[in-house]
Amino acid sequence: MADENPENEQEVAGNGKFFFPNSGTYDGDYKEWVVADEDAEEAGEEAEAKPPPRRVRHGKGTYSERGNTYTGEWEDDKMHGKGKFTYASKAEYDGDWVANQYQGTGKYTWPDGSSYEVSLVFGLGDIEGGCSSTNEPFFEFG
Image (cartoon, rainbow, N blue to C red):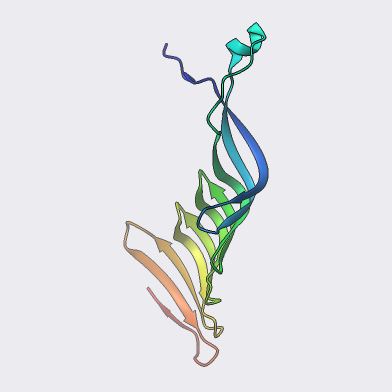
């Protein structure tokens, strides 16, 4: 049987704050893969310099960048599960996410308070929803 972990990588969960080159920050759960140098440890030798661990957002956390903020669930560095994205304009989407896309049920609210509740299934062409406004009555389509 082939070695399933050829680089002696170990998956480790954690919680902390990341700073990204684009001025973004993430504060929350993550997972990373740490390479263990078992041979050097057993021989009592100093370990060679290792590359930094591969780390991804995973679990619950908040990412902010240039006035946009997402707070919710992450899976393998993607918005996935329940979450709320607030845009710099103050519009927001609160609902289900799959691989960084709105999918499932959610509510989009514009800065003026108008909102749109929707159920989305990408790839199948099904869009159902309704809209309400601070100035207009609720309507449905789908």
